[in-house]
Length: 290
Image 1 (tube, helix red, strand yellow):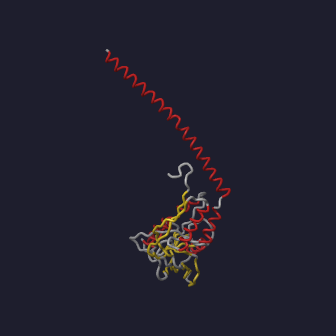
Image 2: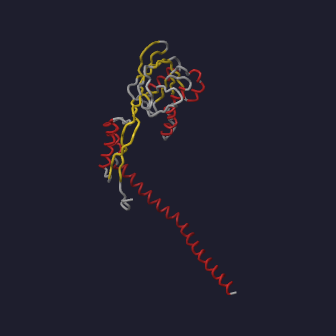
Image 3: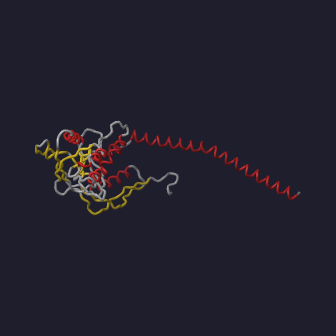
């Protein structure tokens, strides 16, 4: 009996110990959401203060103008990129960074060269109407001018439907921004596929070159581009972007007449070269060494 009671007392003590700790654990779990909420609210207030400072006293637009107007385009491997890296380091130091430095990295070294796109013949009449165009980033040069009739399509679906008409032609994708998107980057994402893979999709059916509308929702005629990529199993044909007004003009002409274009691009890859990442450090006030 003594042994039995001893075991009973021990089990009772263990049960009380476990129950006591369970109550503490439940209390902590119950309190956790309030702690998280308090921390989240504190973070939100701090982030709001940062946003207010930038909106009221920020210099973002001044810095952007300085970078784009005084330094200009900054393709990897270009002298302007090196100048921009030094500029960025200097600006970060001016802003009070505890430390700012340049980190070497190996980058692609693509050069655009000169581009020329013009209407060579329209409605049976020879002419030379220049179009504002730029070769797509990472595209390869045409060598000599590519002179061919234009096949204008709205999108990849129309390309597939008319694939038997593609061989020997310059395919023009007139895929335009969907102006209904309040967040314009959604439209950019939708249309970006034509810049990235439009050349190879057309080359699959025998196209000799491609053009796209510049990715933008405005009405200007400044051609602008980004990068594209080739499918290595298909011919690497020249590719360029048109300014939006010339893009609309070409689309309108191809709706009711036959158009022949001359397309010349000069893009090429030089050996990879050294550029720099720009890094700045702000040490924490509470844990500066971690």
